[in-house]
Image (cartoon, rainbow, N blue to C red; front, top):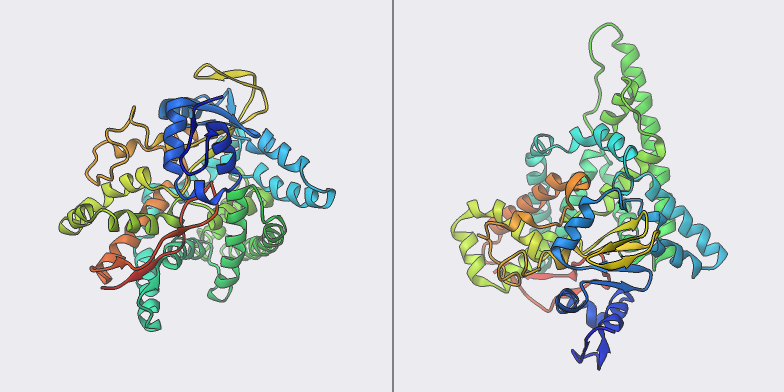
Length: 434
């Protein structure tokens, strides 16, 4: 047994504290950083329930690198199999439906499927393509602030803007009609909670996912029909015209003979785009960090050119995504700790980003930190997050517009974080404009 601690939880071992943390103990969830530090110092690789938890930077990076030993097919691991075993037959049927979506997700596949899927969609998420969205994202951010001003609310809930900006940017990429956005948002919130808790909201996540799947399949059929009609109308007269939304682009590539995405792969990709992503909480998390450290806020306000490098420090210091999962493809070791084939390996990237072996004074926010870009928030190696440039753009635009509109903004009440261990962000964040 590893070191015991009082820490407000009695004389609990690290194993017990970690088990309670991943069991959604609210007191431990309120301060994950102390637990992460204790794990790094005393049990950097530790079996907790159905998963082997890895907390040091070097070990997390090594697992990311070793794609032969550690599979991205997370749906095959003990975290999933043990959860399924705890369910009734009817619940297990719903759970299996949700997990089957993972089979078609780019980030949950190994080569060669990962290579094929990533190559087919990478152009749409390249740094250059994402930069073309800057004006659109800026317009959406100002529109959200206009809504706040029109409401007269002061203080207002920033968590809503922090979540809505990246969500609305994705909706615009998918050409989701304005009338459907609120419905999409309710579905996405339930799916995201399911992903962050291994589906403790199983029924709600199931219903939301079925609705999202039906909508996306209809959207795909509609776009395919449009592409086919445009191609026939323009036969022999150059490229087919049509909408410039992402769905149409992917379907058009399919029609042109590229390596096609199946309907199931498209559904999985759109579900992930709408429900995950590091930008969803990062605007709120960055505002909280700056409010607690007025010297850093003053530095940023004095020199706005620091914003882009500061985003790397926010991703390192106060990330939204705290962990990702891999599955051991064979019996192996991580830093001398034995791992069995089929075990889920939980890589706690938020802990790795606070590892003093990698970052000097890691628990201090420093927006001028030169090595902040070494943060692992987007993964590492061939599985580095495809949406990293879009996330960075959303965070940059959101913070830029927010502080331009409300330069004297301040946190106006206590911060309460959601009861999740996978994604960290406030349930509400009341902000006063002055």
